[in-house]
Length: 229
Image (tube, rainbow, N blue to C red; front, top):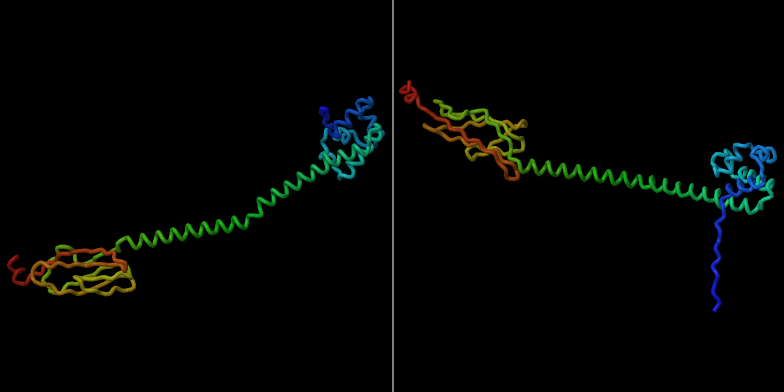
């Protein structure tokens, strides 16, 4: 069997390095080359240093610069130009396409992100509203009793019950349901019995939570008041 000999391929140098190397071998200065090619030294130096972006001309002009450079130094013009197109022009266009694609990918999902943000905000708002509703349901209703005061003593067998609660709360006095106005205030007259009377005022929500206040009121007859005096 014949053994295959591995052929080592020498990497081709970039166009810019090949141009500079050829000029130095020809012992030609940049000034001399600038005179023969009619290209400024700054642009020639940019070509040799692979700074193609520093040459403010389109690809066709850069291609003509390289063509003149190669012709003066007797380099294979077509080979140099083809390598320039592959290495610099096509490579730059690929990078530009990749950059545009990345840029487009970043922003093309913006409407989706906005929709997702709106949905998240809506969900948070709904959760907050439901939490507030649950808290208001679980929390007992507020109940304030203006009169009577606990331990109140009177000789009048009719007693005014006056208080305030939420408008939609059901109020009862000693088990009897009474109505409250638009401000949640309620008033009710109860009849007292001689001696100590227990007044129980309750405010109950539709879902069962309630608040209760108890007052003890004493009804004394005129005779009892006279005896005490």
